[in-house]
Length: 148
Image (tube, rainbow, N blue to C red; front, side, top):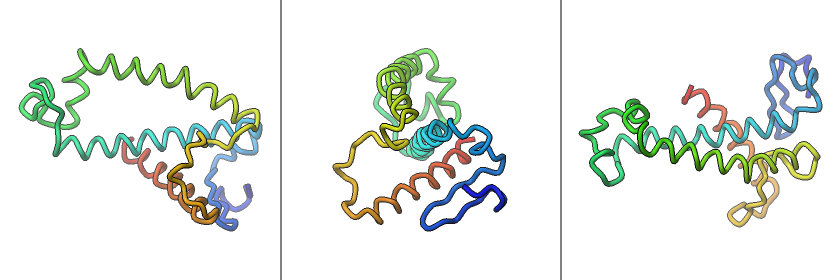
């Protein structure tokens, strides 16, 4: 990372953004930062997709109909008593079982940030894989801004 370039480093096919210089100040935590960025980016991309899909398609049931929840932004408050508790439970379970051990492995250097080893759909070409990883990172950043 080159801090003197104003927080942006274009080196080969990598793109890193760190205007506050956190990668230098907290160097041992950089793998955790990248893991968190990728995880939150993936979640934000799903959230943006959910916002768009909700305007056109609803799951069956009177509580989820367009009449009960006319606007997408009102879905959280309208469904707070029912499915939101289950969503919180399943996300918490995912964090305990999957995310926490993976973050520990990342911090020990046993795996790359964001890599769960699910490569059955990944391209075989290393250059194409790196391009897709960069697209995921940049689209995740955009989605985090969109959700925010």
